[in-house]
Amino acid sequence: MSNSAKLSTHGDDYDYPVLSGSVGPDVIDIRKLYAQTGQFTFDPGFTSTASCESAITYIDGDEGVLLHRGYPIGQLAEHSSFMETSYLLLNGELPDKDQLGDFTRTITRHTMLHEQLATFYRGFRRDAHPMAIMCGVVGALSAFYHDSTDIADPVHRRISSHRLIAKMPTIAAMAYKYSVGQPFVYPDNSLSYTGNFLRMTFGVPAEKYEVNPVVERALDRIFILHADHEQNASTSTVRLAGSSGANPFACIAAGIACLWGPAHGGANEAALNMLHEIGTPDRIPHFIERAKDKNDPFRLMGFGHRVYKNYDPRATVMQQTVREVFAALKVSDPVFEVALQLEEMALNDPYFIEKKLFPNVDFYSGVILSAIGFPTTMFTALFALARTVGWVAQWNEMISDPAQKIGRPRQLYTGHTERNYVPLDKR
Image (cartoon, rainbow, N blue to C red):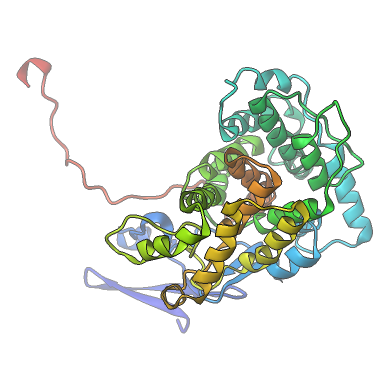
């Protein structure tokens, strides 16, 4: 075999095919490894394992590249809309004017929630975290929309996909309204996807809500930048849940639960908390010195990325967006001044340049969301709202993949070998 990898174990040699994608590193196909050798690979976190074949999103962390269906994220965030990017992720190509119009109208028609779900919210405590509410409500959708849970039916899959994308802003906005004791605001089909969400979140029945176009565009960009990110923890969770044949609402609820973890979806909240800890610009040098001290547990949150070893391509767009939002809202909070000055100092500090600790998308998004008026508890809920389209696209791709199997990771067992039960009176 000319394009194969050779493995020698226990005195025997085995050849395994090397597969090439359209771009990115080759992969060694080890599907027959256990059958042939009686051995598994050991890869905690699956960081060296391709769990599936996908044509949706490509990341090159070393070069700072993020492509959706081949299109650079910077171009999409600058020129596209979240609805257009959603269509692209779901269907593989950018829509023409009629296709985008039809898709947007379809999503708009599905924004209302079943009225009985309002009583579901009232079962939670007022101080419940929005992500706890979203986990419950999204999982409960399968109890209300039985007509779109047959995963073997492409029409059912399309309808449930549209429903999830359309209803997530309503679900998130209602979670916020419930936490602050304000009445739920119904969707307004005359507004854009993002404008409608802003109105449902910050509007009240007593007065007319005017959508600020700068804020609307900034939030739409944040949605685009969080729409999909390849096989991350929450996306892998959605695929793993879906591999068992679970209905799409249950799969997305599982993704929300995984995203809730601070190491995944909570990074922008951690970055904002750090800015509050620094407090004022004059304290920045002290905290930078602490970050350089290996013996100090303090870390600069929102800098560097597990995947991107270069500049986070999503952060470039956010740099300008921060300034646009600050100008439009006339922001004068010292925390935001800390963010701007910390960014400038870190980008020019040889230590951070050498370590490639550049500001990432979480550094900017938390600052922007806070300036708009979102409490930190809503940050991850907004992440889930945006990522739903990526989860749905990945779930649909997995269901359509003839090579798809139920997920079944293996283990390196280090517990007791077989031993005999000892009766209670003999222990």
